[in-house]
Amino acid sequence: MTLCKTNAFFVACLIMLAGCSKSQQELLKGHWECNGQDDGAKFTGSVEYVSNGTSNVMFEMSMKESGTEAEFDVIAQGTWELNKNELLESFTKLTITRFVVDGRNLPPEQFPQQLKEAIIGTATGSEIIQLDERVLLTKNGGSKTTCSRQ
Image: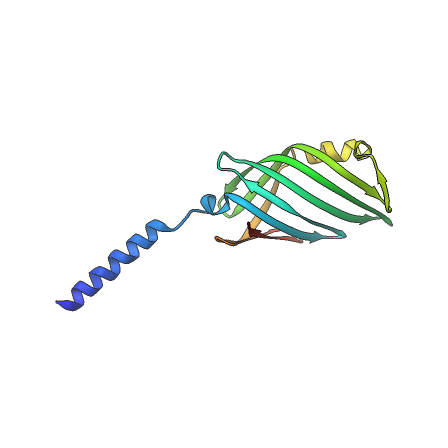
């Protein structure tokens, strides 16, 4: 009789724990500090995933292309959604706050408009490798992004 009571208690605890686990959507919401690297480009910044499917992003990026080095800082708003194990993101607004080419500070207005327009509205899908209370790790092609909850 005692064994049955112990098993029943164990099963009840498992059911309660299963009900307490958070969905990926719930785990993703909040503030994250992120960094990543891909083919000559690296970035660091922060992102806030809001429950209504919007995001607020700030990041610094540096890249080297055909011997030219560029750095820029961005403030952006966007949208996000989860599709199984994929995080789909898109920027709806993008503001360049700092723009440096080959060590020379340039006015942010000189950031290439074509590049800015190519970024806005383009959906990016990343595979979620790990998502828990403290870590978000995604992969998109050859690049990985590591984020920690703030």
